[in-house]
Image 1 (tube, rainbow, N blue to C red):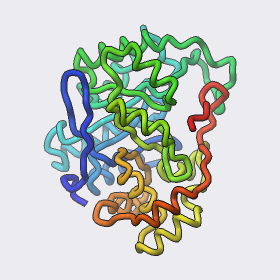
Image 2 (image 1 turned 90 degrees about the vertical axis):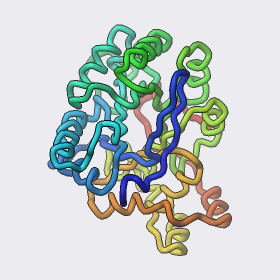
Image 3 (image 1 turned 90 degrees about the horizontal axis):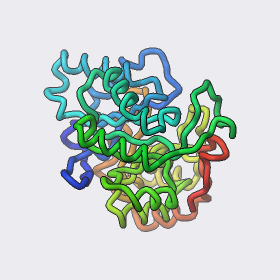
Length: 309
């Protein structure tokens, strides 16, 4: 699919607005050999929105793939790309935000990000922590101080937009109570088995774009599950349309008006995940999806896994 055929959502900020491709390519762990080659293949297939993070370990290979794509003429300009990265919990301190974004830009070999997110609403002391995170890893989180530093990153042109990830309604409302520059995006787990209706309503009311991560349940990751891909109702809908379960889930998210970050290093599935824009779900499909039992996938520790709905 041509990148020009991928729809966009508009990010709002106090000073400007910017288009973000509605579907992005995820680079979360676990990583495999040939990551740079897979990212280059994604660019060839048509992806222009890439979602990375310091904790993923994917910033450097993404930067290498972008550089090679320029050399090959696959991308004409930096403006053709939309790059998102994230501030990790051990850098969630006001004095560490600038060093963290500079390190990210250095790893990516870029002058600026399009979007920089606070990855979790929690701060952790430095250490080699395993999932789920233990109580002793968590320390006090100065959200106001961190957000002021994030705002300064945007003002200085290090990122065009700032946002958050994994913020529930309560934490989002707290941030909005003092933010000078409100978050443009809230990236959260969102799929037919965890629909987050209350959170989506709040974000819509506040003009915050919701980005769905784990739209297919993060199959193959240590935190993921098969509950989306093995769902019988989604399978029935897919058979009726001649589509896969993945395409049904992604189409449902697109019709909700959210943006999506989806990951596959398989070339055919990369293409299939973009083939969601020329067909529609029916009213009956929506009724079936509304019946799906709700449960979240992420469980990263006691302070990181508050229920939303």
